[in-house]
Length: 353
Image 1: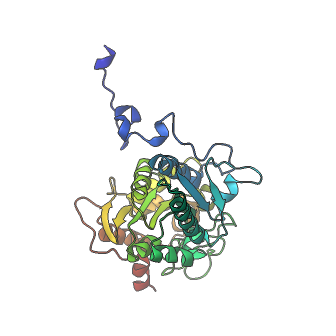
Image 2: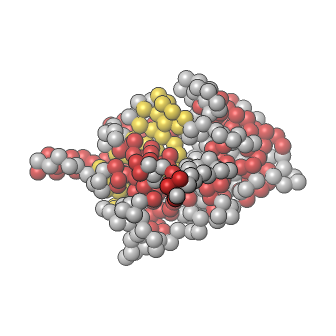
Image 3: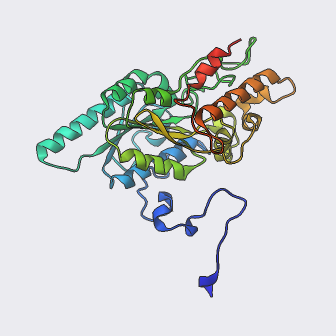
């Protein structure tokens, strides 16, 4: 009798693991998951970075049979996971400086290859370098570009929470326009972060022609697992940027991290895609398009755009930014990316007032 019972999940875009064959189930659903980042770390409640790192590194562990070493930049992830003399990591893990993570990863990859060749070992450990947006898009950008240019065999994962959260929520070059941070206060003619600044590292990585580039969010963790697994199937330089909302820095309820990340995707604020050798190969289509105001109103860093004194022109500019992403990346329906998408900063700069 029980064999005839069918289970359905309604009102959701997800499918429970019990409905999937084992090969399609999330790595976290398995009792023998790698568990590279264990409990007991000091992350804030609702931390998107802790969630993203656990799924990403466990996926890499599964893809390589546990043969990886991780280099971690200074930042939130390093601070909350390794308060001396403790560590929440259950794998070979190196703490680098703020800005040289990619260089250390390149050195480890070269050393691992030389040692394996010397010992006649065909099982060469794979290297993952990881850091926040400050250590990636700003301080570590030079070594990262060098890693791309040399095509070193390293997967670099950027956990993007759009500011320097560990040191007090200062602006980084990944901070979106009009966002309030400790260094972009609500003063002057254009309050919040300036328009026309910053950089899109995924598109810069694509311009280097490296084997694999992807973006992901903690709103679709199965997608993140799949992209890390795909990245580990390549050799050479690879880059994944994961949107990881920060409840403290963004001014979120600690139980809304995934909801806000989903709104970023569904509004076009954060496009999710994959590229190989400089060309986009797939995009994560918007399922239920939302206006950007739905994304903004969940965050106190954008409270000045949702209250009674909000400037509708700024909200309109942010909506236009999202619409440009949707068009450039082909995020709706059967639309295709329009050639090589343009960094959103180009849109901002061409529309500066």
